[in-house]
Length: 241
Ligand SMILES: Nc1ncnc2c1ncn2[C@@H]1O[C@H](COP(=O)(O)OP(=O)(O)O)[C@@H](O)[C@H]1O
Ligand SMILES: [Mg+2]
Image (cartoon, rainbow, N blue to C red; front, side, top):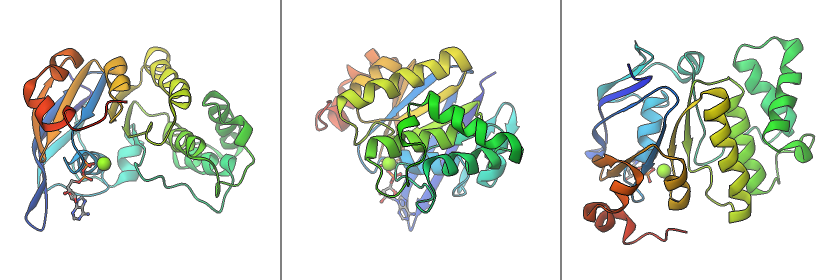
């Protein structure tokens, strides 16, 4: 049985079908990449899956439980975390406080939350920023903080929305290594939206292509990137840096 099953997911905004009958499954421990042009519905699909907005139709099943339309905190408690394309830390707090709050939200005790947060910060390579104000952090650090906050709930499934965007190639490498480690060491199941094709090719077991709110195709990275429809809809136009 798949760990995450999305079936017939749909959402319209004032007549625009942002997500239109999208279905896919992800096995435990697998990595699914999602690509598609801007406006294809990738972020909206994440918002629907993680409970930020309610779908017009369709279902989301996590480990056999129907979580469709559940509020984000319940979905997090059920084991699914997500990062936001537009980062949302508490800018009034420092890095350690931000991660501590997320650990507490994940149900940890007051006593252990700070230590757990410090451990996550260390693991994710944020230690040099640990006591820094969040306001004014460089993008690479903010992206890692977003990831640290998602990891704070010890997710079984992690949805990542363009975590590499804004990072220079040298900054991408440690994040990619961390994502691989999350799968191999922690057994975390990953679904990631990404424009950087080298990362999509390297990480994905399978790639789902969205276009105009619909699934254009799904297949292995090689299948998908050699598909003329994908090249026409997406790869032809996008720089694949
Ligand atoms: N809250 C919203 N209200 C109205 N339109 C929206 C909203 N969120 C997304 N959209 C529209 O839905 C479409 C898909 O957007 P999005 O999911 O952000 O695409 P992607 O992440 O693939 O770039 C776009 O046309 C976008 O303008
Ligand atoms: Mg998006």
